[in-house]
Image 1 (cartoon, one colour):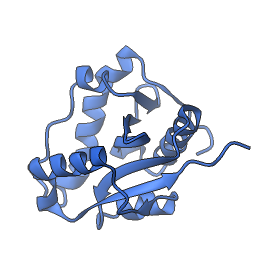
Image 2 (tube, helix red, strand yellow):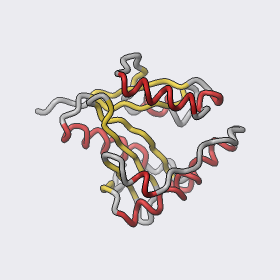
Image 3 (cartoon, rainbow, N blue to C red):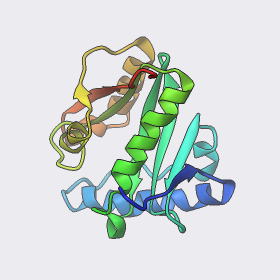
Image 4 (cartoon, rainbow, N blue to C red):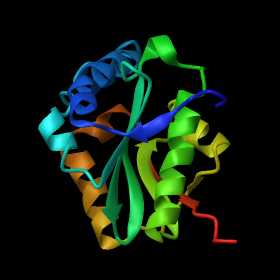
Length: 166
């Protein structure tokens, strides 16, 4: 993670996110997942609680929302050309820091259980599978099922506690 600078996205950064997301989705297409939802437009991302980015031009991003009083990692994407350079880990660390500043107790996410760069990767960064889903997170999981994401594999909720202030 040394040298990776994470910042809050500017309006110009938001315009770059769909291209990064589309490039990252190619990894799923290589696994035979051809019917992913289209990348979210910049206007939709602008409504998120916080969007964090790394790189100029943007090489990775994290979209954060508030869900059930927690900070929820709605999307994390890193351009394939920039993977394995610590960008994803730096974005995760910045998400936890943002949650700490906001007074949240944990960061949650929904992801594929068996995709190597999903749940196993998050687990290496301190996330654990959880069944402790509040009503808003349950609704998000149900929405993902409506979108058809569960057709491509088992989805799990994961959470990482936010360290207490010292």
